[in-house]
Amino acid sequence: MKSNKLTRNILIAMVLGIATGYAVHELAPPDFISGFSGNIKLLGTIFIRLVKTIIAPLVFTTLVVGIAKLGNLKAVGRVGGKAMLWFITASLTSLLIGMVLVNLLHPGTYIDLAQADTNGVKELMGKTSAFSFSNFIEHVVPSSAIGAMADNEILQIVVFSIFFGVAAASMGDYAKPVVKTLDVFAHIILKVVNYIMNFAPYGVFGTLAAVVAQKGMGIFKFYFIYFSYFVFGILCLWLVLLLVGYLILGKRLFSLMKHIGNPLLIAFSTTSSEAVFPKLTEELERFGCRGDIVSFILPLGYSFNLDGSMMYMTFASLAIAQAYGIHLDIGTQMTMLLVLMLTSKGIAGVPRASLIIVLATCAMFKIPPEGVALILPIDHFCDMMRTGTNVLGNALATSVVSKWEGALEE
Image 1 (cartoon, rainbow, N blue to C red):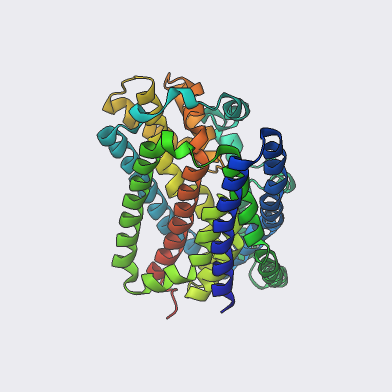
Image 2: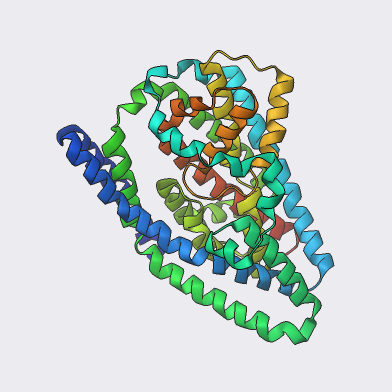
């Protein structure tokens, strides 16, 4: 009942946010619009920051407890191997769908060069160096566990947590008090999640009102075809994921979709995967996934299994090349696909993280990186679609691995 009420409130907040933003964009003077957008966006910022405060301790505690409960290194390797099999297959499928659709539909030819957001791209260009291939290993291995938690570097937290969890599991009964304490701590954090979720509708309202007030609904006039093709690609990806999910989970897939409805809606409207990590953890356990599997697979998925983002990275990169009339042969596109597979791992679950990868990839393949400015005006709405898809992919991955392990309760 409480879950249904939250869903209803979020849907109402989405409608009110878009309507309010549109009214302000159409009726208010430019100076007021700028101030309004900056102030109303604080509601979304507050919500995401509240969630981000508990991401690091939740990932650490749940992952350590999950590994410790698996019992031994052999079990960790078995479950991790099955998870990575799903992650790599899903990522390659997502990248290939994006590549095939761009080559068939040519969305880049419909991009209006006059609508480039040059100011927005300057901010992104300052962040691309961290995602070059040469710095990949440095990005994966933390120099400080505390620093990784302070910066919410999920992949680095995962690496440290795996070492800690394996060490705790190897010590047997001696480490049980620590594992028990971390387990209690994780449940306290999940209780905090319920309090924070009450603020979700306000965050959704503020986020959508801000972006519509600034951009207006008119951006769809220029980018309708580009956005429509991307949505078509996302639907194709959903179809593939759900079909595979049904083949493995059977009719329980429908129950899973009901359980993850709220996390999907929040991720879709706030464009932040991190915002739903705690709630998704709770709902997957309610669905029947065993706690130790959820605690192990889900944090890994947030670093290695971002299906919507992966598809968008090939879609956007190749569309920008088309907009500039740059021809890339299939061999070059396949090379780009493999580069994206590597450089995208560990990207933050926050808005526009995917664009940083797109920017770096364009520069690597001699595509004008400034071309990202062409897709920035519509990116918020694309981000809504890819973030929701990321959540679906990770929920399916966790459920499927639970099924494979015989750890999915009826």
